[in-house]
Structure formats: structure tokens, C-alpha cells
Length: 327
Ligand SMILES: C[S@@+](CC[C@H](N)C(=O)[O-])C[C@H]1O[C@@H](n2cnc3c(N)ncnc32)[C@H](O)[C@@H]1O
Image (cartoon, rainbow, N blue to C red; front, side):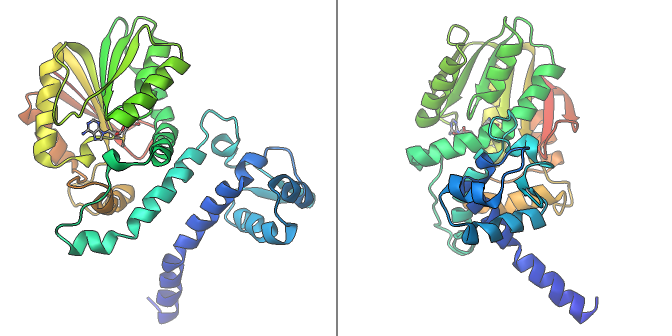
């Protein structure tokens, strides 16, 4: 590669953090909530956000440059990303942008996480209420399209379902809304379990769903289930814990019962796909002993726990992969 191109590529990689800051700042200022498909003038936007037009204009133009929002001669509006940025859209991803701030702070510790063997980080247990809310919003934004995919593509008629590390409860709530015969339990750490029960009540599903506070490494439900969900959990845990978790799940499943699990998996070369490579780095600062597993590793772990009929489903609408297996 020519020297000029090497320099220019390196600069653009080093500067990529500026776009992250731009998006987070725009979100915090309320720009995405303020814009819609109807054009708003610079004056209108600056008045609504209570900031001067001179200061907000470069931010808006930066967002236009990156094609996140649009500009016409009369003002600014949402177009390409309207489904995920419009205030009332069910696919709204601004919760994910909020959560990115928490993750960004953790990246400040990346060097420590690698050099210091005693590096201990604040994990889920130590989240403040505000961080727990941000985390849950981020999880929910992520989970909605996947939850819809699962509810629409698999049969859950008359099933009892256990959702392990259920986050916002998005998966079980979506499935229970589609199947009125579904009953289920969520388990999670105390702070998150409390939020899950609130979300269950919000949807008026408390006669069929419940969340129970339970550390899955220390205790596990005893009653039997048709399906167990284990979404975006295994990368938080070292291999031994995943093995124990899969054994416990096998035990609570009824004969022929299904496990549904997602995570970001690496190909066996461990340098692809891009998102999983990045996520493997993120887990260094985001979890104590977690790791990103390869497809071979998860298939072997499922086999070791006696699961059969192991299927990898790539069509799920996300960068994660879905595995389904049977007892
Ligand atoms: C990345 S989130 C995934 C949430 C949800 N399954 C989803 O996909 O949207 C991981 C979840 O595991 C929960 N969790 C972490 N450690 C746990 C533990 N030891 N016992 C129970 N839940 C735990 C977290 O509180 C969080 O809700």
C-alpha cells in the first residue's frame, strides 16, 4: 500500500471514535427524539433543544454527512434510519446508544484488563440503578427483532418456558403475547429480576409469567420445562460454568424439550466475523471470566451435556447466531 494510503487509512481508523461521540452526544441532546419524517428548521430544533443554533448546526451537519439524518434546504429530518430512531418506533435503538456509554467507559480499562491479572471489574451485580436501567434498555433494543423472529418461527403452543438471564424479559414476553397458552419463568440477578416483574406487570401477563431472583451459578429451578431460553448469556461465563449451566438446563427440560441459545460466535479461525472479533475484546473489560466461543466449542459443549439434534440458525435478524438443540 502507498505510504499516503497507509497514513490516511490509519487516521480514519484512529478517528472512528469521533463518530461514536457524535452519535452519543446527539442522542443525549435529544436530537433523535426531536426529529421526525417532517422537516424541522435549524431554528425550530435549536429552540426545542434549548441550545444555540450556532452550536447545534455542526452536530446536525455531521449526522447528515454520516447519512444518519437528512438535510434539505428547509431543515433536517429522518429518513434512512427512521425505523430505529423515530421516537415511538417499536424498533427504536436509542436505548442501545445509552448503553454504549457504559461500555465506552469500560473500554478505558482495556489495558489494565490485559496487564493486571487481578483486574476485577464491576459486573452486573454492582450496577447502579441507573446503569441497570440503561443496560436493560440496551438489551431490550437488541432483543426485540430476535424475539419476534423466535415467536413467529417456532411453535410454543401450551409450552412452559424458562428464560435464564432474561434481561428485559423481551423474549418470554413476546412469545407469551403471541401464544396465550404459554406459561413461563424468568430468572436473573435481584436488581434485574425486579425490573422483569415490572415489565411483566406492564404487559398484564402476571397470571402466566413470573421472574424470580436467582444466580444461575448458585441455584437452579427444579420444575420441568418444554423450552429453556439462554439468550446472550454464555459469553459472560467461563467454559466450566457454561458446561454446568447446560447440564442444569438439560435436567430441567422435559423429554424432547428444546434449548434455544444465542451468542456472538467466532469462526474457528477466531478472526471472523468482525462483530465477534470485536466482542471478544469487549468481553475482556465487560466480564470477569467470560469469553466468546467458537461454533465448534458451543457444539461440543452442547454434545457433552447430551443435547441432540443441534441446529445452527443463521437467519435470525442480528449479528448473533441462534442454536437450538433437544434433550
Ligand atoms: C447480556 S444480558 C442478556 C439478556 C437477555 N437474555 C437478552 O438476550 O436480551 C445477560 C443477562 O444475564 C443476567 N445475569 C448475569 N449473571 C447472572 C447470574 N449469575 N445469574 C442470573 N442472571 C445473570 C444479567 O443480569 C442479564 O440480564
